[in-house]
Image 1 (cartoon, helix red, strand yellow):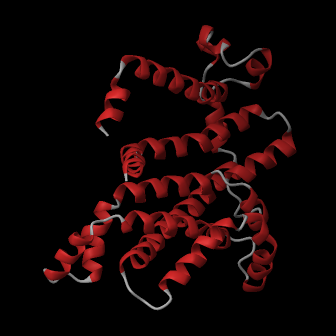
Image 2: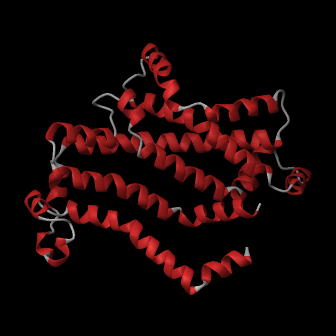
Image 3: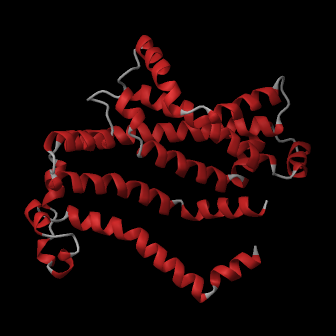
Length: 279
């Protein structure tokens, strides 16, 4: 760990990371500048021309975006899909991960192997049978249906990740808590969850990004009233072609939310990655 920190602290490595960061942020900056330009200015030249002519930039596109009922509804649909799908996966996986790691119950190992086996099942295989099932249950074309699909396919990896992380908690800590009279629920909430916060934060980031950016599942399971932003933007492109004054701010709005979420949990995410690298 100390060697890694010393390596990251060298000037050459820091300069390299700055360059990588700038390269990574360039498309985001370009999209943001494009979202502030009119369709006429965009047709005349690339987004970098706005650096020499800042008078091109205005928030008129975002004002028009807020008046676009399809885009705004799709944004809130995306929130209503991503937040529950992420929360349910994290909560259920944390409970299941603790149970598989530290609780004795019948068929624990076979059930866990079944969960691991589900990791190799591609999403595409389950689209048609789940669509038929949701149609019979009245969930097809609804936000709860999309959420349930994401939860079902996100849980195997989530349970596998948290179970392995919780299993590395020293057994002596749990035994000491039990000797002090702590119940399993109290041990889970007061000991396991704080220790597993880096892994939980990493899982939440990955799950949120996957659900927020998904288009395949939403394209099949969501109807026009429940489709998220990715599907709505694709529909706008198909209907209006190069409607850049709407598509650019809509795409930036779709992109900036995951970026904000990532940087908000960056410290916990890095802790989870570093912890996993030295275990």
